[in-house]
Image 1: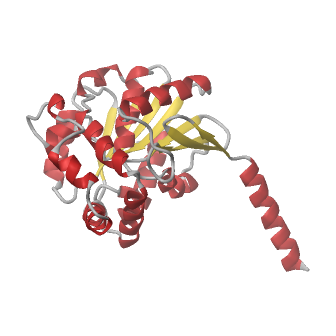
Image 2 (image 1 turned 135 degrees about the vertical axis):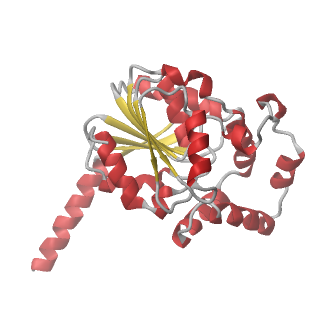
Image 3 (image 1 turned 90 degrees about the vertical axis):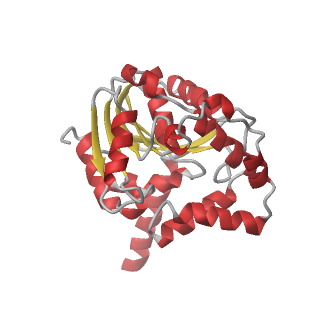
Length: 286
């Protein structure tokens, strides 16, 4: 009898939890909304589903209204036409205004960090706090120094090669990408699954869009308190901090923290540390 009662209570809890959650489909993203309070927007990185933030959300001290995004072409969300990144940015701005979210916090990993910076520049009086997880305002400057954005085109020998890869060849390519971004074997599997699930054209051409981004000239417009979490591996803390300090030079209020023994996916390599740092920041004690 007691067991039956416990099961009934659990089922009731799950039903209430599900009913308080809604999924909204927009042109360039899908967003799951749950909870009450001030809005916290979660932007995942390139090719990654928004569910990557679930453990983070569950463990944060601050409980707001969570808006968890997955972008077009990834994790089962329908692809859109190019240009991809600029369309997402425009649709996110429209979403924030339509939902009348008031002051917001944005947590963004990798490409999600780029989107967070862009929105904080365009909505400086609305974006109150930022958490940027291992993202650079201009990734191209580090990966392809001296190459101008206009030199990068959708139609290129490298893009065509990746687009035309057979499944086994692409799986090997994707595995190498995933295994370089975390030391956690479960994390590698999850990242690999997301990459393989991605729309191939979005994966290839969307990355070209990413490489064209340079948010450095507008960083001084940002008023939000910004926490920047960076991964030191595999390049070393000195080099990473040199790039961070150079690229974020124009950003005003910022705190930079280096994640111990972590690669790009800090949430897989050192989640407790990341949770603690975000808690401190959102509570105003970092």
